Amino acid sequence: MRRTILYIVLGVALVAAVVAIVLWRIQQAQTPEAETHTATVERGTLLVAVSASGSIEPQTSANLTFEMPGRVAEVHVKVGDEVEAGDVLARLDTRQLSLQVQQAKSALAMAEAQLTQLEAGPRPEEIAAAEADLHGAQAQVSSATAALDQIEDGPTGAQIAAAEAQVAQAEMQYKLAQMEYDRVRNTTDDEDRIEQAGYDLYTAEKSLAAAQAALDDLQAGANADDLRAGRANVEAALAQQDATQARLDLLLAGATEEQIADAEAQVERARAAVEQVELILERATLRAPFDGTVAKVNVSAGEMAPVTAPAVTLLGITGFRVDISVDEIDVGRLAVGQAAQVTLDALPDTILDGAVKHIAPAATLAQGGVVYYNVIVVLAPTDAPIRADMSANVIVVVDELADVLTIPTWVVRVDRTTGQTYVHQEIGGKIERVDVTLGVRYEGVAEVIGGLHEGDKVIWVQESFLESLGGEQ
Image (cartoon, rainbow, N blue to C red; front, top):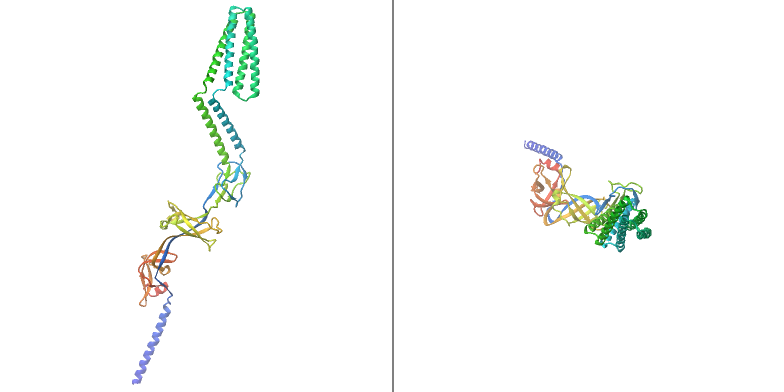
């Protein structure tokens, strides 16, 4: 009986053991094996940096355009040429402009000569000519008066002889005036002197005609018409005498302030005209504003120059820069002069030094409402084969935090509901969530402000394993 009971007990125990083994295997099959990684909270130094990407640009560049329309006469450069500041790159046809410059300079020279003449006063020869005119006019008055007296009193032998002498003298004056007129015309281009000599010749001719008429009248005897003509000759001679006297007085008095001021204004207008056409002529020549390399040439000799597109694009050779866009959260950490490190996609093994040169004072709004600021980073001189438009990545270290707690960012999780950051720790054989407060993050490392201590172990566990445990522990 006891043996039977023993067998029963052993059988029950065996069945229980088998069931337990089966249940354990089922549970192991349903529970995935946990994949974990462990990290240690450490104390060290953490860099704070702002990173962005952009493209390489020369520090100086220019799209050079002709400021006036015209046909291209010369193109002196091609793509890839290196030029110096002031070098001629291209030139329009300037023949018409050059002629306008010469004409403007001639007008300026004439205006300056007129001003100089006014300021210097009348020349001795001008005064002498005016005095000669006056003497001639006075002689005409005397002759006309004598002729009228003869008409009125009747001619005498002495009068007739005198009239004949007047004719001879008038003939001599006419010949002298003719000789002077021919001499002036052949020796000078001065229009004023030529005009004066011609006037003197005209006066002498009239005087001769008047003397001859007076003699004829004397010889013919007086009549009513002769009396009227004689009186008219006297009046004309007196008017001529007054005119020549006034001209001589004007010469002796010199130019007035108003005349000099007007002449000075004419000189200034002529000089401004020269400067204007010279400026237009200079604009017909395209020159390099700085030392650089020719990147594009969009003109050819014989073609009309484009006025809306650049004729030549010039890139400076003094250095390169990177234009980047920094969001409004990070831009406050930047300052002009901060050091930067630049890497290029085309030269992955090269690290270039740079510095922040400019931060835009105003933001730019991108699509989606993103606010960013344009920042210029200037590269230090380098022998690296840099080219414009290369893709570049910029890192600007803005701070260095010493003696802070750090953990790798891959162990950090974020609560999707609350946004709280946390990590996992194994405590008492269980995986538990520990909320943490983080500070700065950079290159996969985060600053620990609260929730952990130096030396603490934190683990990363697969999500599937946590879900198999019924949620995070």
